[in-house]
Image 1 (tube, helix red, strand yellow):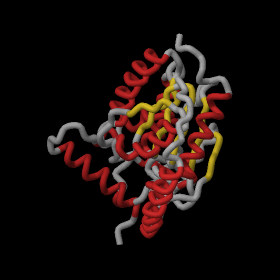
Image 2 (image 1 turned 180 degrees about the vertical axis):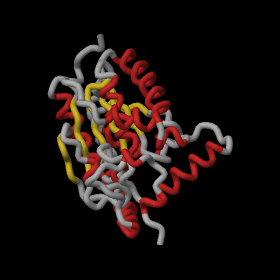
Image 3 (image 1 turned 120 degrees about the vertical axis):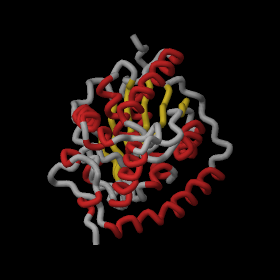
Length: 270
């Protein structure tokens, strides 16, 4: 049997000591996403008439690896019912260079905050959460708070072997000439090093940070998702299910409100 390490194309520094990819059989936990999606459907029926007053504070949602805005559409809809003004990332499939994706999201945040006159909060699922943390470090003038969902910030390479194989396929396709995909530099070179180093920098004062994680996560090592700088919130769902389970959405809404009430969101952008 091929070991996780043997198929992991990411640089060794992305898997620090103390973390490890989930075992191969852990992916079976992800089957619960069907039940978690069902909970969302039931909750939607219960809340179909819920319409809270709209808050001017914007919330940008960033999808995970190989996913697009559609994956977070259910969460966006639920947050809007609670009064949050949500925005899409304009990512159709998160398979390109992380640094380039961060630059595009930075421009997106500039446009959103200029329009609304206040800093935004960013909710990121998995890889999207890691990008969100980097944005918070780089542009605290645009980011008032972040909420990460199953984002292995402490060890980006501590993920299931199936994900490693997907990364390797994307890198090979990029080498073969397919545009818009991550390259070897993105996962094992200077680009990867810059992104990882940035993700370990202190979160600026005045930026809220909540890290949602699950010990049932079948895709990443949950321990890598618990950043010491964040308010940790544990949930009992699958990795994929974090995007749809109403219990997670409740935690996200609570985190956004907590961070907004801390006074971070309402400040006008300078």
